[in-house]
Length: 376
Image (cartoon, rainbow, N blue to C red; front, side, top):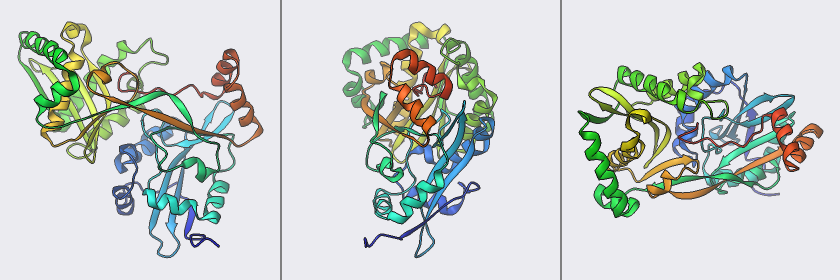
């Protein structure tokens, strides 16, 4: 018998407290991402899940010997048309999905046959299991679920490595000609009035920046599918709550102002030595000729470098500006598994002719997930 058999106990705890001390300790020692942070998941389960009629499905793994929390799989049960799907806690707001544990613990869990078998039983019944937005294969979640091999998504994530001093990073990442072009834009915008750029530091400034972000994004993304998530009350409440609760530690909300009025905003998450851009908005109509988006990202990069940051992560999406700022692409992958005949039929249809694929997507709401800082 493998020495790791029966090393863990596994259960479903749909009332799991993501703000508990034991989860905070687990998260800090884990190889999870910023999108599994206690504040992020607490807000997602409290605010977004009820609004989406999604039911918590929190898999909790503990050491059998000590009872200590060893791993958490933050998941949801979601009805998509007639399909019963199970998926990681995402609801279109999280860019990276991962089990909350260390790579070492995950490897040990895979060797515990009885626990893996029980975990798979606890997840049933379902028609489809969906886990997109996987950054790498260091923790092969498909092996844990007994699912087929993961497949590549049709989008990448982008991140640029930061280094002090800012001016040197600027030249290395942007190139001399683009630095010169942006310098010209800075001169132009400064002629329009008094320009400031700062991080929101109180509830009033967070509220002002979030309100402005919603106002700018509404018209811009009106024609993009189902529009901008920020226009939905539950999502606006979610992002505003995360921005306020994480202020000064987990989140940063930047605001660029012209004569005291917000003209650009950027919301992001702080995780170890990285800043992950979650959502941005700009007064494009008023400052399009000044490339206000590029000036904002340059300002964010400068502030991150001054704070000692090592990575500016633009997250998912293949927008050209990310490579202009030195962003390097990282392929994303996903795992799908059928749990019933209906699920198998849906997965088969998704691989067939385009018209069948579109019909299947309408039934299951399984359109490709292409969230990004611009279109989320």
